[in-house]
Amino acid sequence: MHINQQQLDLVNQRIQAMCAARSFYGRRFIEQGIAGVESEADFLALPFSEKKDLREAYPLGIMSVPEDQIVRMHSSSGTTGKPVVIPYTARDVEDWAIQFARCYEMAGVTKKDRVQIMTGYGLWTAGVGFQAGCERLGAMAIPMGPGNTEKQLRMMIDMESTVLCATSSYALLLAEEIGKRGIRDQLKIKKCILGSERMSDMMRQTIEEKLAVEIYDIYGMTEIYGPGIGINCSHETGIHYWDDFLYIEIINPDTGEVLPDGEWGELVITTLRKEGAPLIRFRTHDLSRIIPEKCSCGASWPRIDSIRGRSDDMVKIKGVNFFPAQIEEILQTFPEVSSEYQIKISHLDGKDTMRLYVETNGSVDFLDLASRIAARVKSRIGFTPLVKVVEIGVLPRSEKKTARVVDMRYQ
View (cartoon, rainbow, N blue to C red):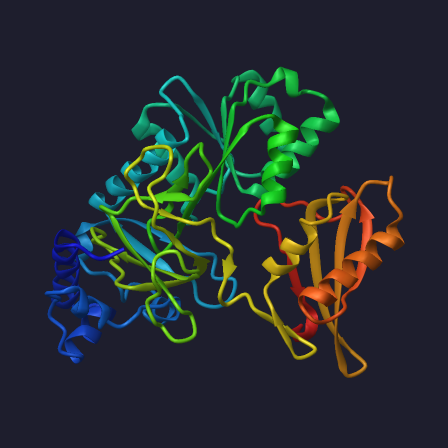
């Protein structure tokens, strides 16, 4: 993808606003003598921005308009340090709703649908984003928030909800609970729109089969509006994103080099219209690629591939670097196991040990399956984990995001 003149003009507007506000990034641009960009080469010479910048600018250092134009704040959880606080103008809130409504439309949601929203509200962007997009579209929003499975199921039945919005982890929990209770025939659900965490192909297939619904994977993050900046279509060939609001690059995460379309690397996003907290060349650390071909669905919006993992998720054990997604890909080659797994890493007797917990039904030999999985991990990645096979349902389910890797070496 090449940046066009209209996008360059919008980037210039953002840079000028940052400099005028003398925000965190505005001061950086002024110090580096950057007043704007005239060409793609100028744009590619701009420095990257990162999440650590936003923490350094906490709480309102990245605000790029006068405070009386800010109408809302959102924030990340801050579980790994200072939270990231993102201010929104009224225009930002409207633009976000426009993008989210497009996501619903891409998923085939209409004004006749009843949308049960089971993601978090408050400072977190998910719940209010799902609701604003739903209302912008004109569908009926049922803003339940997360948890309280008993009440969620009762409302699904009584309200005849047709669309569920949740994390993939909670959708799996609900699907299993619906199966246990035998109430699927009482439900009107047609679609699930899932986000806030990466969803494996195996988890997607499990939810689809248990609920007999269409699954849509919505993309976003707090720093870039929130969820709703992209979604897959019914052809399931990548995530369409809105290039009138965003410019996307893929870079080599180690060198920062911009990669050609089609090559896998780290996703970098520039917000073209965001006023409260614009971001130029923001490194997301999400691993994807730009899909250059036009989608068979006929939509003109460009696409990125489904998120494969994160460049900062790399784990090192016994001198070998690997990503959790690699373990996931190996497990998908075993039809006997469920979509759920957990990696636990500990340091015992002077060496690192990795335990891999997987689920299967009771019709297989647990020891044989554990041995085969361990051997395949050894051949593909280069070390042998201790594999523990358990029955389906033993591993923890979550109403929010599921922790796949528990590293106890630093606890």
